Length: 461
Image (cartoon, rainbow, N blue to C red; front, side, top):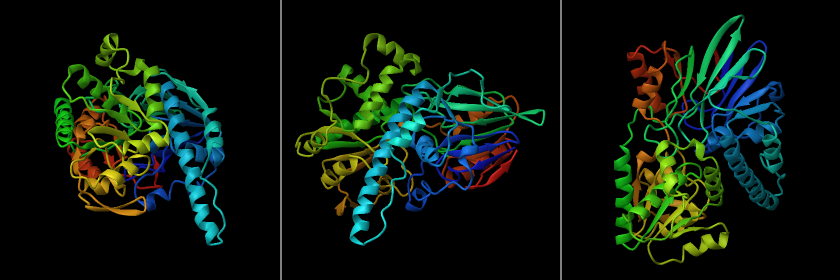
């Protein structure tokens, strides 16, 4: 039995693992690489094996870096069953459809350039055709139920507490008459998760493939996070400026809307208009409204008194492009929530280009910024940036709130591991190398055998 590391090795994005036994081959996740150009180039590099030999894909959750390459996998010949929760399936469709749209647009723009230079046209990495083919392969699973995947493999999904419908997956393999248990953590949730339930612990594993996004960091307490958000809103309002928030369409946007709704009800924030300028986030919010059974007890109680925890007076949903453009002509304070969360695409780039040179404005980061992204550059202190074909100076105030993270911090990772009855061998994945090394050292002190694998490395189990 072996696991080949096809992504998220010594970096955060591109989660994909190929588990092979003498009788079966399955994938766990197939996500997109994000960040530096070299990494993004891996997204559509042909697989060096026959994808049609794989009978299944176990999907932990619907973030782009976990599901974004599934349509490309389908284009490459994969026709196996995709196992996921109902919420993950619904959100994955939104994510993959948006990615397909971008892929088609990118190919169209590239071909305009190539035509001028008499170069051969390129095809998009995938389109809605492959997305729809992928959706036909999904099979819904429930938490805590054993699922027969193949002759020698079964799986059980647990609530990872990361985003709506997210899972950690316990895989049991009958290896030459002996059962071995492998756990893929997926992305583990923050203990102070705003919307979804807490991470469900697993107590049995021989091997664990564990994410390490915040492997050497601690999150701020939830009350501090809320206080920081209120402070930034009030300060920006007081300066007469705009508050721009690059936000991930799934989970982070809904968390922000939940808090803003709470602030409005408490009358703890100024009467300031809020624009949700992301068609993808608007569609994702509709999914959240449908699958409220995944919410934690606090949100469930709030729903008894407030049927729409993501809506409030003063919130405007801007779907059409012209509505988005009109926001830039507004000369009074407002809050703009737009994608993408790392400023690598979407409408937030236009808002930054039009507003970042105004000292009264604020750009607030509420999520992890992968190396090589525009968000990472600005957050790191870059004062002059190239954006949408022009050079702009960063004069607005730059703020960051880490407490919104949907990932477990280092203490939460240790706590998750401590719940296993016997210490499993830990493979540290899905994290920047500088986060993984101190995590590895600490795990060694705690008597966990551990290892940091490299991209395309094959691990014999």
